Structure formats: structure tokens, C-alpha cells
Image (tube, rainbow, N blue to C red):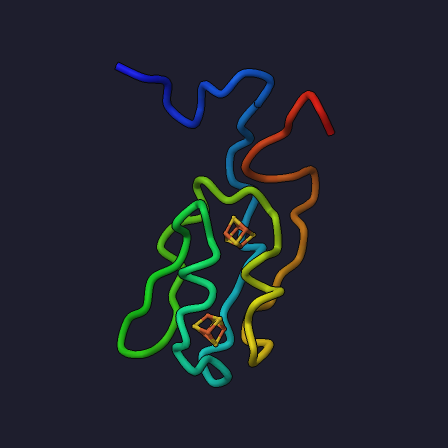
Length: 89
Ligand code: SF4
Ligand code: SF4
């Protein structure tokens, strides 16, 4: 069996420190940009609106915030980091 994402060399995973990504449902137009850009599969579309599935694998890359055309994603980097910390920066 192959390694899981938790076992990637040089990476330490940090447990969740709270909600650092929120979706403003009133602004969301359900375009799926956030779903498509997120390599960690954090989003899903439910009833034409984006919803956070889980932030378990979130890398804090902020791509979802960047690609949202409606500024519907409220993103703040979590204190101390959530997700992973790497040896290379
Ligand atoms: S910050 Fe990056 S990894 Fe986290 S939910 Fe957004 S796109 Fe996905
Ligand atoms: S990118 Fe923004 S507008 Fe598009 S589905 Fe995601 S939250 Fe909604």
C-alpha cells in the first residue's frame, strides 16, 4: 500500500485550529471555481452554493479565495497554522 498524504516526507500535519475559511452564501453564485482549484478537495456544491466539506487536507494556499469571482470566500490564515508545516518553508 502506498503512503498517505499524512506521511509525505518533511511534512508535519497540525490539527485543526478553527474555521479560517468561510463562505458568504449570499455572494456565492455556485460557479465551482473553488471546487475545481482546490487540490485538497475541501469544497462541494450543494443546491447551487459552495459548501466546505472538510478542511482536513487544506494547505492554506488561498487559491480558493483568489479564484472566487464574487469575493464570497472569507479567508484568514489560522494562528500557528493548520494543515501542514513543511521542512522547506
Ligand atoms: S486554501 Fe487551498 S487547500 Fe485550502 S481550501 Fe482553499 S484552495 Fe483548498
Ligand atoms: S468560487 Fe466563489 S462564487 Fe464560485 S462556487 Fe466558490 S464560493 Fe461560490
